[in-house]
Figure 1: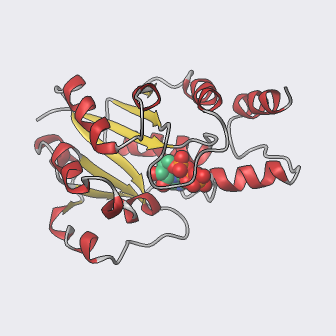
Figure 2: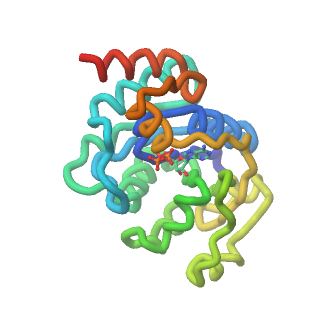
Figure 3: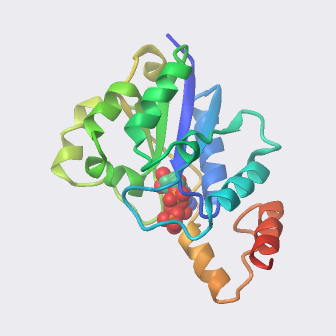
Length: 209
Ligand code: ATP
């Protein structure tokens, strides 16, 4: 029996309330000790970020600063080359051997899991907490259907088993995405109320310099 540590990876281009409220819902529902936010430097499965690494990190620092139990983890930014989650999890596993790791994935990100480098090893290193997202249903791919036997709805099981379980967690449904925020900014629209005000102000300051 070990306490749970949430791992929330992403591009955070920029961080918004869809990330923050989701992480808080998961942390509270599963009684996690903390949630670590891991911005990636070179995401292997998507186009490159719009905001540079330093800006994404600065905005995350602002977003997380007042929230106890939310931690910024920059190990992927500091590592050379592509950000493979399996390498990240192996390093987290070493650093937090007194916790069970729970990888938090939106339904869209979970659907892409079979495309990840060494994706089956991921389930040897952590549990997966899948979160519902507006517009995304449980994926129908044969690889993910084959994981059906690993599903649990009991948070206590995640504390008892070392790794390999999948839990579907419902969270506040917020139809907010970083791509929509970027689109609105590029169209000259106001992005207020989609992300923390201090993050919005810093982002505008950076874009205007
Ligand atoms: P983009 O629109 O650029 O693809 P995004 O808003 O999906 O970005 P990411 O940084 O790619 O943000 O996402 C990191 C993680 O957060 C992923 O697991 C993603 O599914 C999840 N996520 C992002 N937005 C939401 C949301 N509104 N509700 C639930 N999960 C979300």
